[in-house]
Image 1 (cartoon, rainbow, N blue to C red):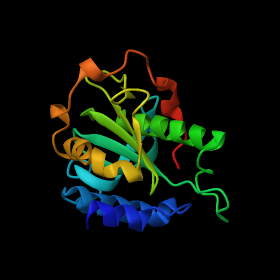
Image 2: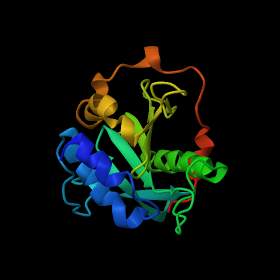
Image 3: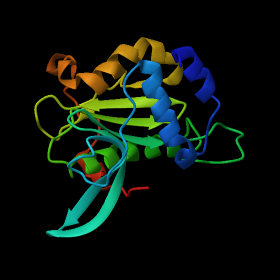
Image 4: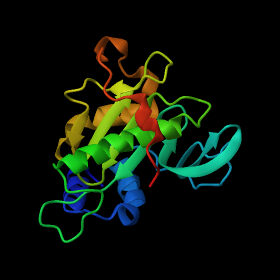
Length: 203
């Protein structure tokens, strides 16, 4: 599948996160020419590149709940997917795109991804959020801390599906060689989002 075919195929989708998530991300892999995720085994030690990886969230030393990471690649990224809808759509999905509610939902998706990342022993370099068929938001940490910041900066960390050809190499690097991506010299000094968002409820 070419990038143009992928963009055309998904641009009109909306309001169906559960139905569309895995297929969208699998075809994204095809379009940017990286391997699709492996089958999920249910064993975190083996599930290094999978959909729906377990994220065991613990409170006071006891297992509290098991979240599901939409797409996980060990040492590379945690991805949290949502899907909003356009104005006039009969279905709402995550929220109507471009509204205050949608902006809040996308910030909450970052908090959810950060919360899941904290359950993993090997800290991922990137956190990705996406509105399926519409946009991607990128966050990164380069100093080994939990201080994930908008990447490459707070003004340009979101790109839209139509921009995918220009962002292909960046996404490929995040999937394949995240530690080769340019680091602290282009990361902004202002925090993009409070770490307190990490406690956002999983969907």
